[in-house]
Image (cartoon, helix red, strand yellow):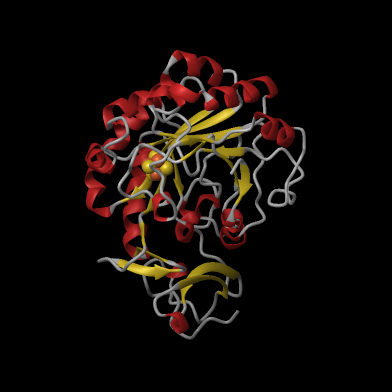
Length: 341
Ligand code: SF4
């Protein structure tokens, strides 16, 4: 697969990804990758030449839209620090190239190798932001191949001290574990996390409290908004940032790039995507969007599409008499059939 850009380009600021392995041995029961492919056969998949070519400005058919040093996202569909790395050392080779060139990247992991000195010494020399997938001790039952919660807190601690920023990915957010996730935020803050990224679980089939969004069944917006509001408040109380990986609620975050890289020197993402069209300031809550917009202003929102059942689609709507102002969170709610634009 090498360096590739997939369909997330329409939603994501950092859509160009690099994976050093095909497959993943963490065996998370909720893994979205294994819905598409067998991930149990773990193989190295890294070309130093391709990485050096990209860093030098070379592009392929899927990446030729980008003519700047966009940060690469490492570990989108496999874990770069999974046990296979101890054998193949492909991630180590990748880090050596990044350390040498200073090229920006974000990596996601649950792997314990990330906190070993062999890797930390390289990571420290890189221009990188780390993300550790971690939600609560109750998730250990879903992630039997990965280090347990307590050990992952230590991975957060090690990476927070050796990267530009380290964020905790609460992805997928599962409402039945809300209390445990809420209580875990304190451990993340204590370990030095810069912030948390939260995104609800997506299912292929209908489950309680879900609604259809594009091709998936996602937790209902009202449910997620309420829970995310609680998590955001607690994260802020603890001195952490909050980011919404949930596209419908992206504007709840302390930035529209849910990877949490805004403001890091050298990290320039692609803002030409739906989320920036939909939640651009001043509508974004983190940019003062809590103030009521004027009548007539165009508001980007995910709205129900009656022609497609419960499915929500992004649309621009004009604020005015058609917005149900008497309802809680009125800026997000529209009466059926009253969409003007
Ligand atoms: S770590 Fe990520 S890629 Fe690996 S099994 Fe878990 S969810 Fe899938």
